Length: 287
Image 1 (cartoon, rainbow, N blue to C red):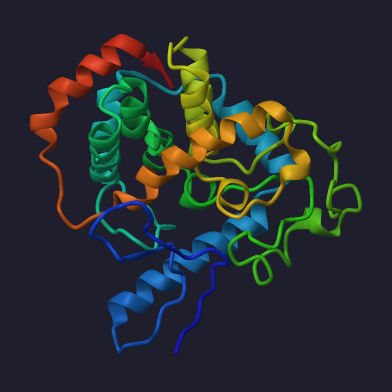
Image 2: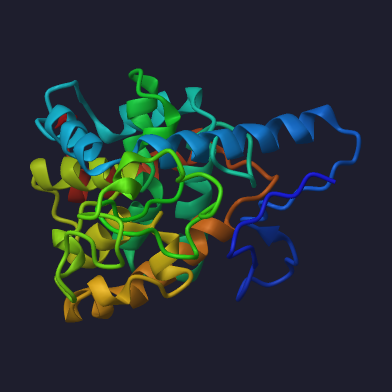
C-alpha cells in the first residue's frame, strides 16, 4: 500500500446525491500503474513547492508577474488557453482545467441564481494558471497555498515530509509560529506562497475589475486550505479576514465539490458567461 496523507480529506457536504471523497491524498496500490503515477506526480509537485517557495522566491515572482506585462487578452481567451492544462497537484481530476471552470460556475449558478458575480468568480478563479501555459513549473502555479515567512501549520499538505530542504526553515527569522509577522496583522500583509490565486487577484486589481470584495477574497485565498478548510493561521487574520471567511468557505463548496465526470457543454454556456465578463471585466486585460 502506498500511503499519502493530507490532514484534511473531505466528503462532499451539502451536495445532494454524492458520497465521493475529495482531497483524498491517501491512495491504495491496486496494481494500477496509472493511479500510482498520478499519486507520485501530486506528491512531487508539493515536494518541489515546499522546497523552493521561500520569502525571497515569492518576492521575485511578484516582481516578475505583477507588472502585468506578459500578454493582453480577454478573459474568455485566457480560459480557452486552459484547455491545454491539467493540474498536476489535484488528486481529484485529470481533465483540462477549462472544464473545472465551467463546472464550478454552473454549480454556483444553480444554487445562487441571483449572485452573478459569484458565478463569474467560479468561472475565472483558476485563470491565473495561465502562468503554467507560459512556462512556469506547476509547483509555483497550482496546489494549496500557505504563508511563507513563518512555520507551516500542521494542516499544510505533506507538512512533515516536504519542508526539510526549504532554506527558510533553517532561518530563525522565519521558522517560528509568527516568523516575520505580527499577530493579527491581516492576510493582506502576509506573503503567501506564489501561485495562481495571488496572480489572478493582481490581474483583477490591475485591470480595475468591478467584482465585489467578497469575490476578490475568494479568488485570492481559495487555495489556502489550511485557513478556510482547517482553521489554522487565525492568529495572522484581522477582523476583515474573519468576516470574509464565510464567503471563501461558501465559494469553496463549489470549487471543490463541482468536480464530476459529466463535462459541461462549454460552447452552449459561453454566451451567458460572456455577458458576465462584459459586465465586470470587459475587453482586453493586461496579464
